[in-house]
Length: 193
Image (cartoon, rainbow, N blue to C red; front, side, top):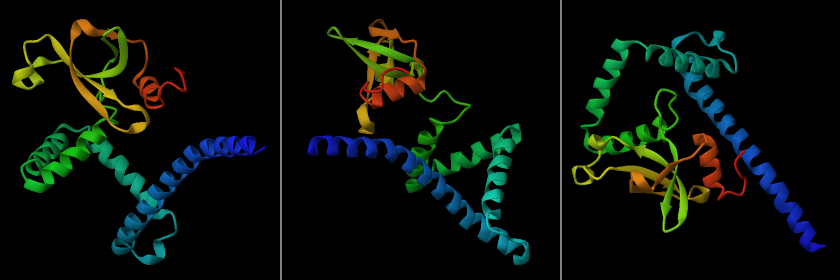
């Protein structure tokens, strides 16, 4: 009886936790944008024009506008110039670069993680993502080896390893990056879906 109860409780927890965390993240994004953009709206316009939810709507419009503006060549150049300034400031460059690299993973304009590959090591195969195959972008000591950088994420988002792997030890896999990431991060429990 106790085993059945604990198994059922764990199943319910595992089922609800992703849903609850997703809803909470969306709630947090909504309330944060409402607080920031709602206060900005109240500061710029009469308070009588404000209604609950307007800050979130203004926030979405601002983000959409910035996304549209980044399609303009001049805006991209100005943004790049501003980034170069940030990359030269002592403490800010480390923090900004880390955030920038993290969010570039999710950018629709960039590849983020590359081709899904299997690495052969001593008869075993590890699933990873090719992150750099241009030897000119590798550190000088890694060039001229006919090798690529491959990122091996660890299960359950614990971390990962970046390996310099000879091309001959790689085999491309027919999986999307999302499928492969889900497969690796859950230690293959979910299977390839």
